[in-house]
Amino acid sequence: MTAYVCPRCQVHAPADALTWCCPRCRGPWDLEFTSGAVSRASLTSRVNSLWRYEEALPLATHAPTVTLGEGRTPLVPLTDTVSAKLDFLMPTLSFKDRGAAMLAELALRLHQAGGLSHVLADSSGNAGTAIAAYCARAGLDCTVYVPEGTSPKKLEQIRAHGARLTVVAGDRETTARAARAAADAPGAFYASHVYNPHFLHGTKTYVYELWEDLGGRLPDTLVVPVGNGTLLLGAALAVDELYGHGLVDRRPALVAVQAEAVSPLASAFHAGEDELPAPAAAQPTLAEGIAIPDPPRARQILRAVRASGGTFLTVTDDQIRAAQRDLARRGLFVEPTGVACWAAVRAAPQPGRCVVPLCGAGAKTGLAAGVTPQSVQ
Image (cartoon, rainbow, N blue to C red; front, side, top):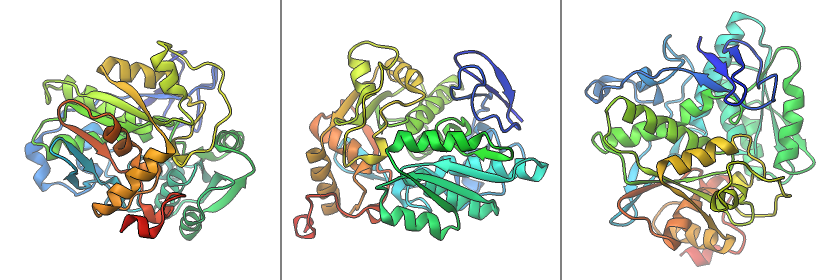
C-alpha cells in the first residue's frame, strides 16, 4: 500500500489505515504515489475501463476486482473549437464513478484484510449514488448521508443499490459534518470523495482518456466545474504526470467554473487570495452539486488553477437554464450542475481548443426550474 500524507502538516499514515483525515489539522490527505508512464501503444489490447491506465493508478498493482466498465466516455464536438466529454454516460450516470471505483476497490481490500465493517459517504446525490453502486458491486455494507432537498430521483437510485440513507436536516456542509462524526466509529471506512485522495486518482482518468482519444495530445483548455474540486484536482494530477513523463509537451490551462450564488473560490482567486475567508452561508442555486461554501481542498484548488495559467468563471441560474435547453436541443440531456461549464464557455469563449465535461445525466434531476418541456422542443 502507498501512504497518506497531509499537505499542510506532513503527517503520514499508512493507506491501509481507516484514519480518514490528518489527526493534527483534520485536513484531507494526499497520496504518496509515483505514477508510471502509460504507453498508448499498449492500450489497444487492454480492458475497456479506467483500469486500463494501470501504470498510473495506485491500486492497480494487484488485479482490481471492482468495476462496472466505467470510463471511456465519448468526446463529441459542440462547436469548431469546443468538445464535450459525455461523462453522464457512466454506469451511475455521473463522472463520480471514476473515483467511486477506486474507493470501493480500496474498501474491499481493507475489508478482506479485516477491520473494516462498513462504508459511509456524504453527498448531494451523485457521489453517494456512485459509492452505493460500487459498494453493491463489491458486496460492502454502505450508508450515505444526504442533505434534505436532494433530488428524489437520486435518493431512489441510492436506495435501489441497497445502501441505507441518512437524510440530514440542513445544507451540504451540515451533511458533511454529520458524516465525518460517524466516520470516527470503529470499523468505519469514510469513502469521502473530498478527503480520500484515491478518489482524485480515479478522476484523473478523465484526462488520460482525453490524451488517448486525441492521439497523445491535450486540448489548450480544460474547463471544469468546481465545488469540492475533485475533477479539477484529478485533472491537475494527470496533467502533471503526463507532462512529467514527456507524454505531452505542454500543459493546458485549467478554467474552473462555479455557480455565481456559491462561488467562494472564484472570489478568492480574483482577489489574489491563497485561502478562503470565513465561509458564508450557501445560497440556493440550480447547480446544487457545486454549491460548496467551504471546500476542504480550497488552497490546492487555487494553486492548481494559478499554476496552469487558468482562471475562474461563474455562471448564473439563468445561464444554466439556457445551457441545459441548448444542450437538450443538441440531443444531450444533462442535469443543471453538469451544464455549468457549457454555460460558462458560451458566455466567455476560451482561446484555442477546449473540452467541457457533461458530468451528470438529466434523468437524475429533470429539467431545471423555469424550463418547460415545450421550451426545449
